[in-house]
Structures are given as C-alpha cells and as structure tokens.
Length: 348
Ligand SMILES: [Ca+2]
Image 1: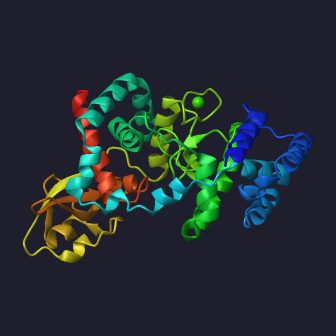
Image 2: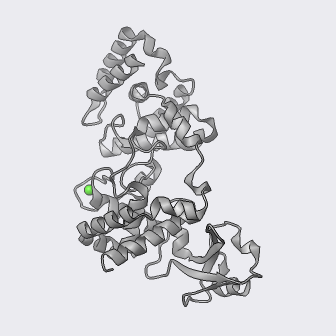
Image 3: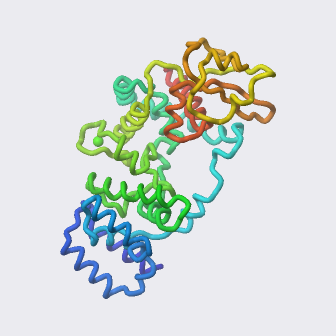
C-alpha cells in the first residue's frame, strides 16, 4: 500500500495546480510508472477489470485521451472505509424524535445565525433572484456541512472509483458520477486527485454530487469559476439555484402544522413525497392544517414519530422541492425547522 500512496502523490504533483494533461508527458510518466513500480499493477484502478470500458467511455463520449484517464485511475485508491460507510444504515431509518436531535441543535442554530449575518447581502441577492428564502439556503448548508466546516475528508476520486468499481449494487450511479467528476474537473481546471468530499463523493458547502455540480452550481461572485468547495458566495448562489431549478415557488408556504382525527385515513401516511391531494381533500380524509392554506393547494400529510405518539404536518409544494435535495421528509422537516430557528435568531 505504501507504494500506491507514494505514487499517487507523485501523480498529484505532476498535474497540480492546473489540470492539464499533455499526452507526451503522460506517456513518459506512465512508462516510468510501468518500469519503476511493477507491484502497482494489482493495486490501482487503472488495472481494474472494469477500467477498460470506463476509459473507452471517457475517450469516445467525452474526448479524453486513454492515457489521461488511466493516469487518474492509477492515482485513485480503493478505500474499505467508504464501502463500510455506504453499507451502514442511513440516518433516515431513525425515528423523527432521534433524527431531529442530529440536526436541530443549539450549536447548529447559533452557527447558522452567524453564517446568516456574515453573508446577509449575498443571501438577500440569492433570495431576490430565486425566491428561495435566505434562511432555507442557510439551513441546507447547515444540515449538509455545518456551514462548510465539515464538508468531507475523503478524496472524491477515491469515493467515486471505489463505489463505481467495487460496489456493484450502485455501480451505474457512481460510474455516471465519476464520468461527471472527470468532466467537471476538466471544465473547472481542477485537479481530480486532490478534491475532497463525503464518502459518497458529495462536494463542498452544499454537498453536490458531480452531476448536480455541473447542472446547478453557479458562479455567484462572478470571478469566473463556480467554486462550492471554498467559496461561500458561490455555495449560497448554487444551493438557491438548485432549489429554483427544481421548482421552488417564491412566496408560497412550505409546511403547516396539522391535527389528525382518530379516523384519519392511514393511506394518507404512505410516505410518498409528491403532493397529489388538495388541502381540502386531505382535511376531508382527517388531517387538518393549523395554518390558513389555499384549500386547492396540493400537499402531503406527514406523521412523524414522537417518543409518545405522533406529530402531524402538511407538506406543500416547496416542501417537496426540499426533498429533491435529499429524498426524505425528515430531512426536509429538519431543514425547515432549523431555518425557522435561524430566522428567529437573526430577527428575520
Ligand atoms: Ca465564483
């Protein structure tokens, strides 16, 4: 393993800081690789049985040279801890009363208010342009990465190659993300071997997967690059743009507290996230909003587990949009509740 580490470091040196491969240089480099480190042949992703097909895709569909893709794969390392992490039960399997304690903490609320104050002008601009409330943008960044403080310590290349090549269950998804990552880093002039992210390859303040990064990240401070790793201004604009592109409707409500009658139809709580019944229809089936809502607005009824009993909510269209960020009603509710506390903390 030591040989792999030493050599991946030298790959990184060769192409840092600007990710521009010159074919002859890489050819010489690879020749050096082959001569100097024969033991590497079984230990890097350039030699994985699936590598040839992947390299072919990058060459034929995205205009890379085989050598440059092989060099990146040679610098990637399989990480058992990534495979262990993805196999662990997700947070969303916890009941609400435990789940919310992860995200709705005094510290996350306080740091959210600080982040809000620090970036107030940027947040106001993002809200004006997209209709997404500033406190929702801040809450998402807070839930995802503690306001950028904990944005992942794995190399993205290790996460995506490990999961693309050695996690068959989700290989197509992660292979596609690996393709997007290499295209993204070429587009951005970044070194694919140094960027960090989560064990699943999610990146930066807002934890965008590479495909989302390419589709939704924006250069919100107009310096020529959309950088959600280091630049909170770009991160704020990108999270707002993500929600706007996924259908956010400015000025509309997100959720309402609700009450349920004893005879409420259990079919209402089937866990589906897309609103499909009107507020009036849901009321007729036994779950009534506390807030005054448009009776024709589409919603879902939500029933969350408390230690003793349940709490009920109606989730409206914008609640659904938050679940496009992370497909979980508890996630969206945590974002909403954190956003309300942050707004209260900054006098919003
Ligand atoms: Ca920028």
